Image (tube, rainbow, N blue to C red; front, side, top):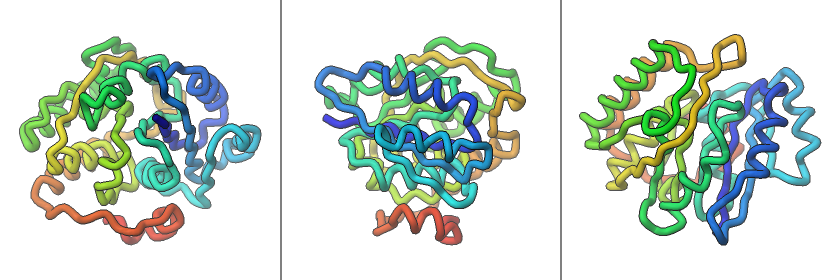
Length: 248
């Protein structure tokens, strides 16, 4: 069974080598192979040049502009060829040593969607405002979608790939998380959670999410509760990158 690990990156030249080293060394469930798909979302700090060193080891896509994390993930989904898809941030907040815990329920056929919950595991350094925003988003997701989650906004999300491709995603920025949560639940998939480790970083260390993104996430949860679900279409990686006007 092949695991596709999608890593959206933007201006991560300082930490990306450490992230890739950990991802490459991380153990997978028995019998699984690893495919790493990096989507460089228009970096301007040398990340693009750095990735040239890894082109024999990973699948790399370079976007000409900074479209956003959601758009980068959508490109990654189109390029991934694995049976299971896992999202990995391009920083050191999440620990790839948790891959086995996140992936095992999918490999065993016990789940179709798995989230790594920071609140069930080890949580370090999260500011109170971020903690509160996470709790509010999780509560909203549970009320609107009967999701029964403890951590809706976690970056560690893994899917059976056919389940993920059955969703017509429209996200551009950080609204990937609420959109995929909403559509997974509306398609009838239970979301299984496992405990993971988390070590928060700040804006000075390169963290890019801002308080405005919390409002966008809330709106996304509300919008997709009532918007008719779209069928997946023939969206290519180039279409995602160049046709952002299609992504409302």
